[in-house]
Image 1 (cartoon, rainbow, N blue to C red):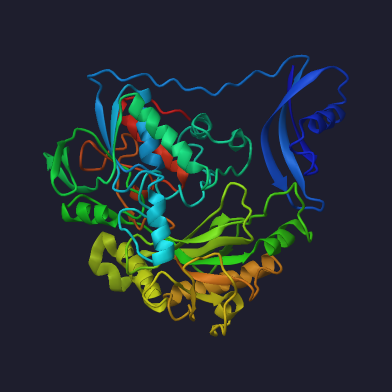
Image 2 (cartoon, rainbow, N blue to C red):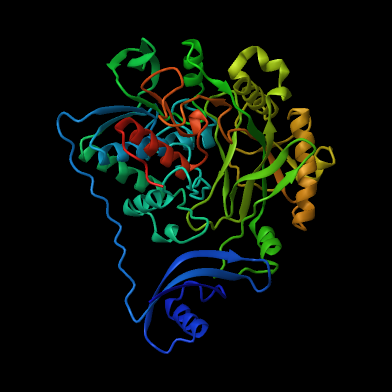
Length: 518
């Protein structure tokens, strides 16, 4: 007999199997032997003391089945169908795995370096404030998510098998907790090895990876992809092309526009990254001075509706660090990440608001690239305000809301450093206005959040792509170019590691005529 129950337990019990079994026995008044499995674990902080909510499958007088996570990737045959993939982020890599599973040969081109080789270029941004346009926090094996946290939470449950993606991550080295936790997270320190394991499997089974290999042209005949150019010289025949280039591959959008391939303006969000002490966020969320050893660093999710749009938190990083995420010199971009233990003394989050077509009339001359050019202009203005370095223009939070300069700035996790600037004069007026209103509303929702001990960093601008590459809903092909498959974040169809991975797999299945799992 199998019974599903939910129980609330104290934090010190939530990971203790013997104690959980006692709780289950009491809940069901069981006198006979039983086994159990936790299918979901989440925190309920609505009341004090804070508790964990566990969803448990109880097996009465029978053993819980052993669930062995195993994937069989067969060696490809010599004449396997070839699928060319541009980009080795989560969409490209999981597309590669799906191609192997379907008996097709993935050939993956990545403009950046292998995952561990990227670290030198990241260190150069931080220490020397020099950005390599092809190897940075956004570009390189693993994509933007690799060195910005590895958050796995997604709402894209109707687009494909979230469970399959999580199980594959476990298969390649992630902790099994990601299958249970309500908001799973791997951590920047653990992701590189997982990514290496995926790459080695794809190569072992017959796929290919090419690094330092940038897409520079596309050949089209009779509205169909027939070839690609890599690094301005190498021409390769191509019958099926997946574009999984990420939201920051501006040169790809410009290439498509130049070749009259349909692209569209897409609304996106832009704002700042705010940093508080983690102990403050813990005290607000858990309503206690010290969270103790059994509760994780607290997170938050905030939304406020202004007169005509939303202001919301984005990519919140408990126990995290703010990183310099520009993809070229002459711009300043921030993002956040956390290690697997989330044990840094700061918390940070993007606080952003929507950018619509009607907000940027002065950029309409750029057509579908209007949002991209607007995004560039804000990032450049932040670079100028920061002294033409990777230092960010920054301001204490209440000072920003009150529109007054900060006399000094608190310590920060952002290593290149801060420059005290009134961000109301740097950000576009409609952005600054909505952010001020949002912060005031958040201060009412979370008492203590609106504090001058918090500092905001400009700008958080790469929340999603400002361009959409339109495709057919059923075939996943571009609406007018056959055999071109715009994919994931860079095409405007995903937002995060899991949803991007699902989209990559869906594109491969569409090419192979295989029904995707749901």
